[in-house]
Image 1 (cartoon, rainbow, N blue to C red):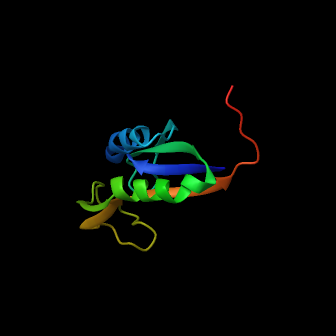
Image 2: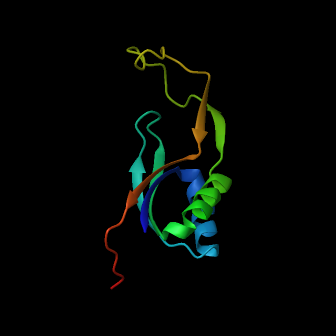
Length: 108
């Protein structure tokens, strides 16, 4: 069994949760905030059996698409670690997924 720690942009959360329920996956939703854009995102904890892992990754890829948006932050006088002070377009969306082995799981 695996535990997926899945970080998703807020606008992708509802469609992803609906798809997870539709395909009989369960998730725990945690509010979180991203560092780079300082915009809301959500962390989902998803437990999955090893044999369903590939289909779950495919579902996440299908729902959480990358897209571009304008830079929502004002010009920063100190820049962003070598990125300059302003970006025209930023790639957002998609998902960041960490997969962790689960030694023991009990539903109480």
